[in-house]
Amino acid sequence: MRTRKWMSLAAMAGLSMYFVIGSAAPAQAMHISEGFLPIQWAVFWWIVALPFFILGLRSLTQITRQNPELKLLLAVAGAFTFVLSALKIPSVTGSCSHPTGTGLGAILFGPSVMTVLGGLVLLFQAVLLAHGGLTTLGANLFSMAIVGPFVAYGVYHLVLRTGNQKAAIFLASALENLLTYITTSVQLALAFPAATGGVWAAFLKFAGIFVLTQIPLAISEGLLTVLVWNWLQTYNRAELETLNLIKS
Image (cartoon, rainbow, N blue to C red; front, side, top):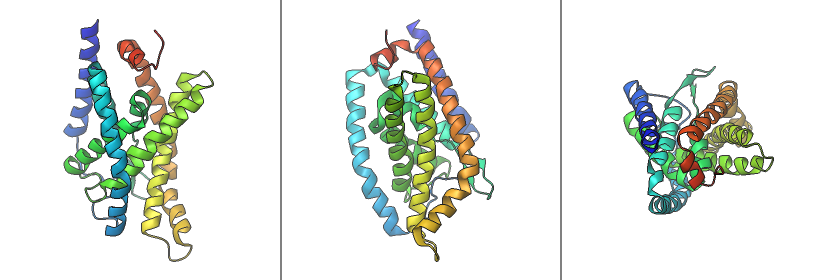
């Protein structure tokens, strides 16, 4: 039975990577593109994001040392983020929106670990898929791999008090998606304030570009995360018990 679990996890991670890399195409999505931010803002977001990444490395090292059997589940959380955040859907303005996929990992391992996994995902997407960029990696890391996971973790534990775990998972994943995009809109507004209305007017413009596509995407991501959670409960119950996410 344990062999089946590992084979199932490996297959999920492998197929996810195959579908993304096998169909890779340059993406101009909500990841802020290479060279798009003024240098002072690019440096600022790197400085803000790096302490979170360092703390995440400590958390990740601690988990893998104490529970090495969770390494493949970590890979699945990373692959889930890679796949969802690489998908692109055209928005009404010709730009693109996409899911983020960081909610599942934040629920499983906590937000700090997802800062590292999300950072690696963003790095590979910038290098392999021209999705995002290296100079803007700090800004993208802050929005998708810091704000998103911390929102997911907080929402999950807040809603879990009601006793409905599935609702907690759905809302955590949906709201981390929306807050990631709101954060990116703030970042863009700070870097490019409007001539009339300043940062607030710019924020309304950037956020409004994506709102029509992002709300359905957030709902879809929440539902998909619940489906994956059901799958994990079937094939990886022991690992979820180790993480104290379900009772034996």
